[in-house]
Amino acid sequence: MIDLAEVIDSAMSLEPLSETASRLANIVSAEDFDLREVADVVSYDQALTGRVLRSANSVLRGGSREIATVKEAVARLGSGVVLSYAIASAMRGRMTSALPAYGYAEGELFQHSVCAALAAETLRAGCRGAPVPPEAFTAALLHDVGKLVLGRFLDEDALRILTEAGGGAGLSRLEAETEVLGVHHAELGALVSRAWNLPDSISHGIKFHHAPADGAEHLCEYAGGGGRDAAAMAAVAALTQAANALAHRIAPHGDEQAAEVTPYALETLELERAALEPAVEATRPRLDALLSSYC
Image (tube, rainbow, N blue to C red):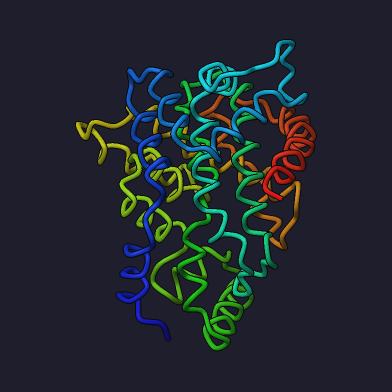
């Protein structure tokens, strides 16, 4: 079997994010940040500037006036969306490779991740609960980053044992990973996020993206740590779970359970179940448009 210590060490030593992505993550997670700070950072990254301006002027954004400056584009898109674009650009090369251990062909993990981030943005508009921090979009984007780590260690024998554990005992894939390997991909993803010095709210959303109700027991761990309050942290995990579920509906990937939004997520966000399918339909064209911008 795999060496758990080696897996964790691999998670902690992944190549860092770009300086642009790291700076934006820390700016956006501050309670009193200024959009001008976001615009200043974006302005020094030519590729990101182009993508932000194109997106701000997309017909899907519904703007009646052409946006010509980064500052205006950031104001139209919102800081959370701009941050998710920066991290998507930084992660694209790593996430486009095939990941056979999880059944992802080339490009599919990146597509699923971007879809989740867009679904999070769409859903956020219908949330009436605690305000959802802008970095929640990035938690949705990176929710499966732990699979990049774990996928390196899952050989045929390990995959067979995981499959048998899931089938024979009726465990979910996440439960089977924990039972057989001692760790699951969401926990590893949180370790990666911490290694990249991303805000606690992002790590929390990644770690509990399958079971946000379980994360409620850990909210006290962040008190006094300079991060978001408990309600905001809970909202990030809930929105990440809901966004992942919608992404699985848009592009099913053999996990019907993952396509269900949990009652806890709906309750935390004060989100109507009736709003889910319209959000799916609204996300589809935006996914196609955004992915085409990477071609």
